[in-house]
Image (cartoon, rainbow, N blue to C red; front, side, top):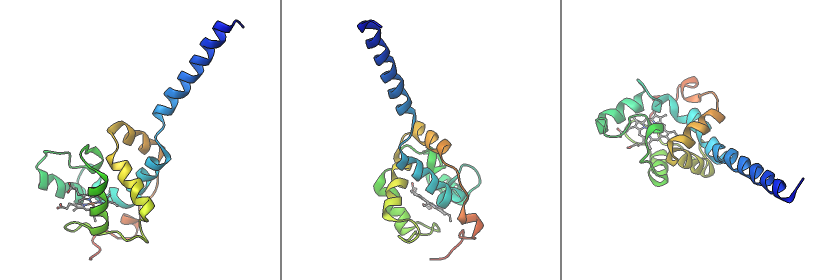
Length: 139
Ligand code: HEC
């Protein structure tokens, strides 16, 4: 193989790796997607869910009612609401969602729409909110 075609081959391989890496969400964001499915989505998925309905009412459609479709969320807001609750949203303790997991949730909800979609594809799981009747838990 000539030096030139070897160089082209190396360039192609590295480009392929970079393109692949760009499509792979970080493991932290995938963990965040999984945590969201586990703790949040029964109230915050699109459709007739209590959190989604409440946020539709609060913002009147000026931002998407489903949290995962929002692009204006940031770490500070998400962490604050998760640790303190809001209206009838329960707060979550460190024994339920650890500080490290909370960072993963923050990163997931604050990441862009494409990263969120990729992370959701990489994650899947059951929800204890529905299974254990946590919906409606009083503070
Ligand atoms: C029992 C239902 C319920 C669960 C479970 C729940 N939420 Fe909520 N959430 C709500 C409701 C209702 C609101 C809207 C409160 C309001 O402002 O009227 C809300 C609001 C929020 C907001 C504020 C959005 C804004 O713009 O004000 C964030 C962020 C949020 N939830 C994140 C989460 C995360 C992350 C989880 C999972 C760890 C979660 N929620 C679990 C019901 C829930």
